[in-house]
Image 1 (cartoon, rainbow over the protein chains, first blue to last red):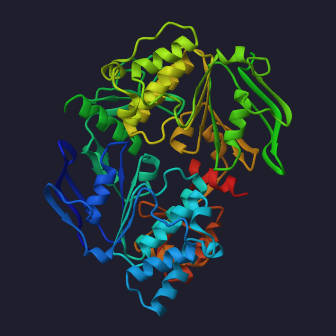
Image 2 (image 1 turned 90 degrees about the vertical axis):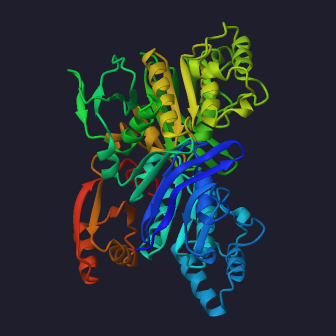
Image 3 (image 1 turned 90 degrees about the horizontal axis):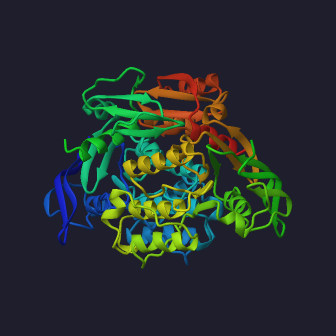
Amino acid sequence: MSAWGLDDATVNLGHHVALDGIDLAVADGDVTSVVGGDGAGKTTLARLMVGLLRPSRGRVRRPERRMVGYQSESSGVWGDLTVGENLDFVATAHHIGASERSRRIDELLDVTRLGPARQRLAARLSGGMRQKLGVAMALLPSPRLLVLDEPTTGLDPVSRTELWAVIARAAAGGTAVLATTTYLEEAERASTVLALDQGRPLAAGTLDQVRAAMRGAVATVDAGFTGPFRWRRGPGWRAWFPDGDVPPGAVHVEPDLSDLVTVAAFARRRGQ
Amino acid sequence: MSALCEVSEVSRRFGNTVAVDRVTLHVGAGEVVGLLGANGAGKSTLIRVILGLVAPTEGRSLLFGHPPSRAGRKRLGYVPQGLGIYADLTVAENIEFVARAFSTATPRLDPELDEVRDRPVGTISLGLRRRTAFAAALCHEPELLVLDEPTSGVGPLGRAELWATIGEVAAGGAGVLVSTHHMEEAEQCDRVVMLATGKVVAEGTTADITAGIGALEVEAADWAAALDALDAAGLRPGLVGRRLRMVGVDRDRAAAVLAGAGVAAAVRDTPAGFEEAFVAMAEV
C-alpha cells in the first residue's frame, strides 16, 4: 500500500484560505471522493495533489510527476484534434514508445467504448464521450495516482455510469483514484470520502467511520416539526438531535452519507 | 381537482426529429413532480412547451386550465439552469426588478441573502446566487414553480436548504415541476416522470419505479479480480465502495463466471437503486 495524500495541508491564495489543515489518504486501488459545493476547495485540493499548487503549510505525498494522471474540470481535451490524435499527443508528451503506445491506446479505446469514435473530432463528441476521452488521456501513461476534477458534472446518469465503469477499471488495476464531485450520491460510490466546506473538512473516512463520528441521533419527523436542524428527505423530513434525545413521534433512522454530511454541516454552523 | 399544468398526448418535432413523443403529464397543487431523463431525452423541449415558449406539434398543453399566455405568466415562477438573474445588479436590485415587473411588493430577504443584499450577484457564491434566483421566482407567489436542475453545483447543506424551501412552497399549496438527472433530487419529489427518447417510460414514486427491478451485489475479498472476470464476460459491473453491482444479470450466471475465473465471492440479490433502475430503463 502506498500512502499518497495530504498531511495537515493548508493553501492560502492571497488572503483567502482555500484549504485549511487537510489530512487525506489516497490508497492504491481505492477510489477516494472529495465532495463539496462551489468554493469548498475541491479544485484547489486536486491541483495540490497533482503538483500544480504548493501547500502554504503541511505536506503533499504523491508519486513523481510522470506517474500522476490529471483531468481538469474543463476535461482538458483538444477539440480540433480527433479522439485518436488526442491520445497520440499525450503518448508523445510522455515519450511512450510505438508498440506500447498502440497497445495502450487500443486498450483505453476499448475500456471507454470510444473505439468507433476514434476518427471523430473531440469538439464533435457528446459531453459524456468528451469526459471519457479526458479520463482516457489521464490514464494513458498508466499513472499510479489518477486525479479527476468533477469528471461527471453535467453528465446524465447513463454517461455517468459508463464513466464510473472506467474509473473502477483503473482502480482495479491498482491505480489510486481521487475524484471530486458536488453530489453525495456519487461520493457513495467511493470507498473513502472527504466532505469539504469552505476549505475545511466536514466529514472524512469510510461510511462506517463517518457514521461513528456523528454525535446525537437522526430521526424522521413530520412536516410540522420546527426544530432548528431539519431537512427534507424524500417526500418527508428528517432532523438531527445533537444530544440523542429523539422526541415522541419522531422515528430514529440509521443515517446515510447524505444525512451525515448534512448533520456535520449543522454541527459546524452550531459552532461545535 | 384541476391541474396547474396539464400536458395531454403532446408531441413536438423539429424536422425529422421527434423531441417529445405523445407525453401526458400533470402537476397539481401542493405536489412536487420530478421530470427525469438523460441528455437528449426531451426534458428541455417539454419544459419549453409547458412554459408556452414552444408550441406542441400535436396534443394539448394547458397552464392553469388555458393555453399558455401572458396572463398565465403571472401565476408562474421559473428558474432556468442559467438562473436568469442579472450578474451586474445587486441581490436587492435583482429582486426589486422582478417584483416591479410583476407589480408586487418587494419581499423581505432571508437573513443570509440580506447580508449580501448590496453585492452584485456576479460576486457572490453559486449557492447564494441560486437562492437569489429562487427568491426572485417566488416574489410574486406563483401557483406553479418550474425549476431546471435547481441545485447543480451547490454543496450538501446548500442543497438541503434549497429543498427545504421547495418543500415549503409545495406545503403552501403551489405545484412544483423539477427537471433533473440527479437521483438525490428525484428522491425528494412526491412522484417522478421519466423520459427516454421523448417518451414517458416510467412514472410514480421512486419506490414504485424501482419495485420489481433487482440488482446483484458481489462481495469479494479480491474485488479487482471479480471486476475483471465479470467485465470480461460482458456483464458490466459497477463499483460501489468495494462491492460490485449489476442490473439485469442472472445470479447463477454471475456466480458461474466468478467460479470459472477462480474468484471466491458472495453473490446476492438486492433491490436496485434508483439510478440503476433509471439507467436500465434509459437504455431500453
